Image 1: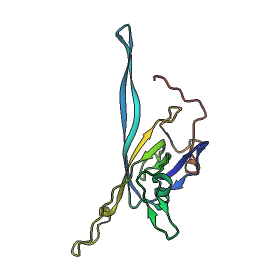
Image 2: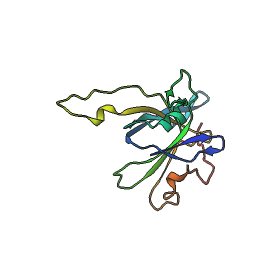
Image 3: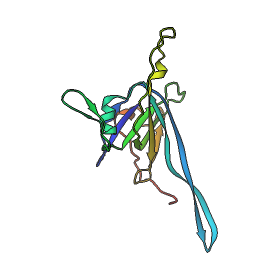
Image 4: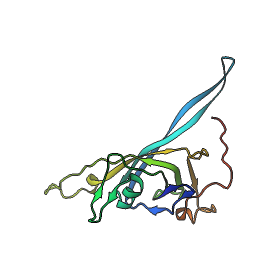
Length: 178
């Protein structure tokens, strides 16, 4: 898994996001109805966004700074402010164990601050690594050109360099119904 901060002219170079445990994203749609002379003339399901959760073993400090707006002082203290400047980013990933080895990107992501949780090790039970994970709530909305996500498979031209940069289409995306 990688993330690439959105810049004015595209995206920064993707940065590794290690420790990903799970990602679940659900499509949120809205029904748009075209009416002509008070009669329904057509309808379409329009994608509003994808929303879900990303669980990591630990959220890296670089991601916290780049995407959550956390700041570090000269003593190494990391600070969270009440109204940070957060960044939009692309999320690039591949699921381990996917028989098709499909690679994915969500283009216009935003993230909510994670909560704080943990658990003390119980001497007779030993450590449970799943108890000390961190979860981010992610929303992936459409870009101004309508793109929300993309994917590719082995053999596609973009596959081998997928995590080196954010791939954009070689065509003008067509928005069929607005």
